[in-house]
Amino acid sequence: MDRLLNEASILVQPLGAIEQHGPHLPMNTDLTIADRVSSAAVERVGEEFNAWLLPPLAYTKSNEHAWSAGTIWLSATTLLAVLDDIGRCVATTPARKLVFLNGHGGNSALVSAANREIRLAHGLMTFLTHPGVPPDQGGASAAGELGMGVHGGTDETSLMLHLDPDLVDMSAAVRNVPDALDENDYVRFGGSVGFGWLSNDFGPDGHIGDPTSATAELGAELFSGAVEAFCGALREIASFELPLREPS
Image (cartoon, rainbow, N blue to C red; front, side):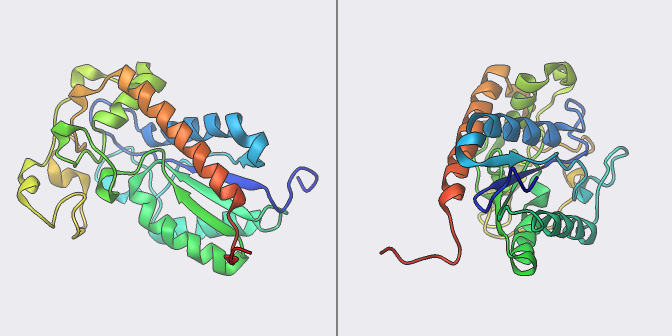
């Protein structure tokens, strides 16, 4: 490993989840998307930017879906410890940059905290990115989802129709958007006031969005865009340094 890596190397850690995604999608949806996007990007630009792919982490913080049998989740304390352990191990190599490509929006806040903890404890430069910014974190959502397609909606279903269509059951897909929240200016998905929620707060099926408008064609477009965006992110990460130096 020491012969292959150097101080400019970037290690990419995909983060997925094993959790319910409504009646129409498989439990490995987030894992599949994160794994396939990161693999495609590193295959395309890994040699150019000295980027290396670590095995994906399947089990993460999915306790908003703990009510659903089959969801396998780590506590916040456990996941923070796991991410710190990964950082500690990466720090024993010559590589100085660790990127988390996170396919599960429920991880985002915790991974942001882990970025700083790993930076402080192990001296690595750490980064968090997503295949697509989740709608409740400022990302886009299909028009019919009112900006609130946060779980198992149009985009995720389209991606899975493109990546692994045999695992998608469109006959079970139904719209489930919390329309009442659209009347709120602040307390809503994507609003300026966050709130703690469980996925079954919005109905027994557990998804939040409109998968009925999903298509494989849209999925192919989203996948291509996600790979292109991650390649662009790796380009900037490759030249990013801390402490930040003043231009000469």
